Length: 216
Image (tube, rainbow, N blue to C red; front, side, top):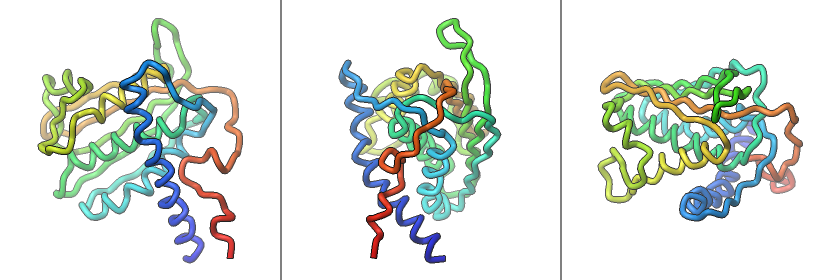
């Protein structure tokens, strides 16, 4: 039990490091100079860590969240922190769409070929599926426009999904939305895979802290 708490504590603490990178997608959106750090990384590891961080919020709203890993090849070439921010935004939006009435979020990861700029690419497809309020077709057309938001809050400025779209475009990927009012939403992210194996470097991991942080 102590080891489980220790591992969770590592994940939560390292999220501080991730939060330090939240501003970078916005800077990338506003500037032409990119600041990504492209490396091979395991997409399922990133998603699994983010789901762990999301579970407390889901539990408080009686929302079930699960990951279906159907990948044969899950190594993606890109910036793991930027892609992590994509899934944090999308999972947070799914939680908001469901609200406090209880529901379910399923993250399905499969290998799928897709067409990018006329060329066939080997890749991963990540479906974020929720049974929340859904969106009308007109709203879907506007969802990636900066400063457009369906959230009724003065704090939200509607840049979240614009940043998501920008990051995916910068990674030569695709994003698709299928949604209907009162029937939920499926957001599909397509990313290209690589045959390179990710280098195991503790400092490059999205959430894990240096082990010596916990030395007695």
